[in-house]
Amino acid sequence: MSKFIVIEGLEGAGKSSAVRYVTDYLQHHGIDRIECTREPGGTPLAERMRAIVKEVHDERLTIEAELLLMYASRVQLVETRIKPALADGVWVVGDRHDLSSQAYQGGGRGIDAQLIGAIKQAVLGNFKPDLTLYLDIDPALGLQRARHRGELDRIELEQLSFFERTRARYLELAAKDDSIVVIDAAQTPDLVKTAIERALDHYLSNEPLCIPG
Image (cartoon, rainbow, N blue to C red; front, side, top):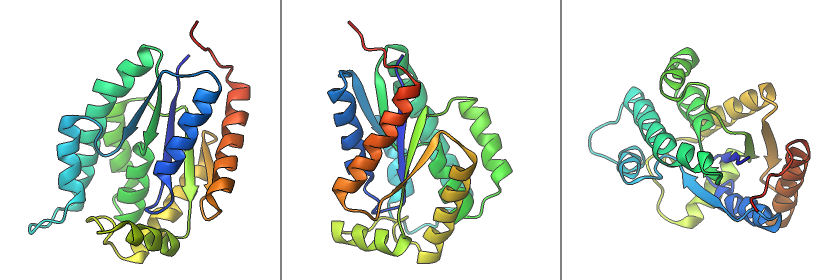
């Protein structure tokens, strides 16, 4: 049975590299039908919503509008790409999913968790990742890494305290959900890769692989 595996984390945590580690691992284990997604975005319409969320505008984007755009982009991706892929036996590896909204809009922005939960239930129902790998990093180090990549987007321009609140919410949520594995992202890339592979080993040892053919 195909699975939905998600990489989460703050800016500079190394999510793109982690997506590659996961796909390499799956391919090594005989799974070659893999689709990678990102949020916000992942479809032509969802990418347009991503641009609104990520780009700097003359007009202030309210936190409520940001939250709704995130979920609009997410449900578009889930319904048009992720669910069809899973139904077709394709494994999906996602760069962010719903946990991001709970952490960024809930923890960082301070939007009520019950409101976020109500929106989530309305548009996603019980749909959730099978496994989430949260790359934990000190926000100051993560932002330092992000700055080295080039120009920062609207979210990355937030104050350090915003990312500290976001990280705290991530860790709070991870402590309550066994499907979320915390990975120390401050380690060297090789150690992060090893930690991810161990997490996948543990997960798949309890979820037998069903490889087509």
